[in-house]
Image (cartoon, rainbow over all chains, first blue to last red; front, side):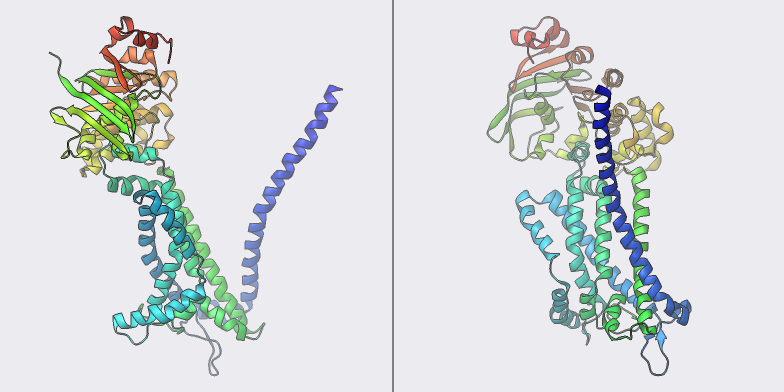
Length: 303
Length: 252
């Protein structure tokens, strides 16, 4: 009697445990399936263009002119360079600024200050990219033109500045979380050894928060590299190889956004745009992979 | 005539309006171990942290009276706190190695002092680790993470880290309270060796530990130093009833 009862109790519980386990597994798999789905969609839609034009044309030609009446060109090089320029420019501005702000908020600012500033910064993240684009056209662009005495302020540096502003909230917010969760014990140990606050911040607090800081930079970079509307509005839209940050550029995202609506579905131009998307996808994937590897290596010692 | 390394006179400490320490007079003798005992919240840790001004980082605190190290009142305006903390090192209750390699942990204090000479750093790291009885266990993995060490090893690493800057006084805040008996014994043996070269002040909740390792004992209660004297006397022949009750475990 007793035995049967215990088995009866056991079964539903074991079943429940299993069900919960499967539920979480399912949720985890959904993300993977979606990722694979996007990957294969981009590849399948892009493949016809690769087959017809050839990888050489895509990656070695720097002229993108798929609608030319004389000779169509499908070179992605100028776009890839433009995207990287704008993104790296944005990071060069946003990363030092973002980490410094985060360190200030977490380690220096008094709690009242933090309570006010942090929500404000997070609201900044919610500003639609179109609005930032406006800002680029009517404020930042003319300012750049005036400052550097050039005729056209809609260029790569404009895009970098705006993307920096857009990725700052992500970098600050996540870095600040990471810095503030560094145990007080580490700081005490450092102070007790005769370090001043600055040394403690640079040598102990920031390195201890490094995984969170790197994650924040990656997310910020993800936002910058994938951002479309702002760069479309503010970078001047010249699909040519840029020679400096003061040249107008057109990024990969902007090209897709502008041209996809005007192509014949299933045509070569249409498929070529999917190749752009596929390359963009690979780029972000690579960035994430590399940063993950760097992080793993870093954490082996500094754990 | 014993040499006094540090002494406090009429030292008061406040957390905002709360007086945590009242008129503490204590002489800390050089190359001896001074134990601070007393029930939780009696002010012994606050007193310990006053000796290297670690309480400064807590907002809203205030001190009165003097604490003298050598001939310098450490609470005078012109005292460099950074310099003071190099002379008066500290080991905390919870071992807190940095998430860095073993070597980098010990070298930390030297590096923030601007020491870059690699061979000198290596020498001092080795000496500190030997002095803290950790060298044998870690010499072949100095560049591994300090977080991989056991709790007792981590605490000895923290002691090595404090030794590396060659302080004059070492403060220990319940250094063995989170360790097993064997690791505790190692720490106690270490304290016994270290007093040849350093002056040690240790806070402990463990009566036997105080009796074993210390030369002098101060009994704190409700923010006052109730009784202070040689450890033997405090434990075998205390002058005050209160002290006797505490050391015999009648309250605590």
